[in-house]
Amino acid sequence: MGDRANVIVVRENGTHELHRTGWAVGIDLDLLDGPAAVLAMLPELRRDEWWLDDTMAQGGVLLGLGRKVLLFFAWDGPSTELRHRAATFELVRATWQGWEVRWLYDGPAELRGYVGLDPEYVRCRESALSVAPFLAPEDEDLAWPDPGDVVVTVGTDHCHVASGVFDHPVREGTSLFDRLADAPEHGVCHLHVSSGIHLDPERRRMGWWSLSSCPQAYEVPKLWPGWSVEFWQDDWARHVRACGGRFSPAPFDAGEEARATVLAEAEERRTQRARHRAPVAHLRSTDDLGGEATF
Image (cartoon, rainbow, N blue to C red):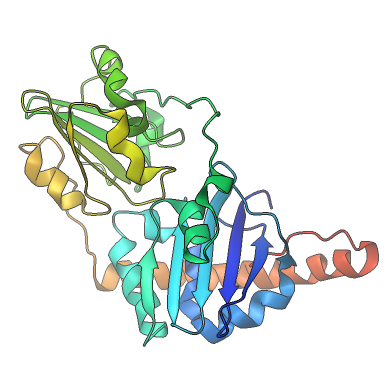
C-alpha cells in the first residue's frame, strides 16, 4: 500500500521505537481495538529510523506507555469526517480507558516534539504550495456523503467550496482573496465537509478549522499579517455561528447511527488486514524486502 504512517511507542523508561506502516488510510479504525491489540501488531510493522515528513505522513500514532498517552492524526478515515468524528473518538476512548487521547493538528512535527526531537526535520518549507481549485455546486466531487472539501465563507454574503485533496487554502494567506473573486458561488453549503475558513474582511478577522492534520497548522497567523486569526481546531460549529447561515451542514445522527457505521468500517478493516497479513509475511520471509505491513 502507498499510504504511509509512523507508529511510535514510548516505553516506560522514556525510550521510543519508530515503526512504519503502509496502510495509513483508516488507521484510526485500528485504534478501536485498544492498546493491547495495537501493541500486538508491532511485530508486523517495519522498524525504521526514517521519519515521514509533512507531505508523506498520511497518518501517525504515538503510544506513551508510561504516561498512558495516545496521540494520533490522519488524512482519511471516520475521524476526519464531520458525521463520524465524534463517534470515532467516543469509541476510541471507550477502549483506551485511563489514557489521554489527543488529536494532532500539526501531524508528524507534533509527534517528534513529544519525544523531544526537532520538528523541523519533517518540515517541507521549500515545497511549492498545492493550490486547491474551487468547485462548482454541480461538481461530481461534491456528490459524496462525506466530501473531504473546504467551505470558505466571506462575511454573511458569500460561500465557496474548494477541493480538499490539495493544501488547505488557509495556507495561501491573504492571496486567497485574489482567487475568491472568480470562485463559483454556492449560496449556502449544506455539505458535510471536513474543513473550513470564515473571513470577515471588514474586521480583518479569520477563523478556520480542520478535521484532518494540516502542516504548520499553528503557524498560519504568520501568513495573514494584519489579521486576527483564530484556529478553531475541529469545532466546525463556530463556523456555522459566524457566517450567518452560509455554512449549515445537513442534519445527521452523531449517536447510534454514527457509532454503528464506524464499527462496521472497523470490522471490514479487520477483515482486510487479515487478508493482507499472510502475503506480506510471505514476502518478508522469502525476499527480505522489508515491505510495509498493513497495520
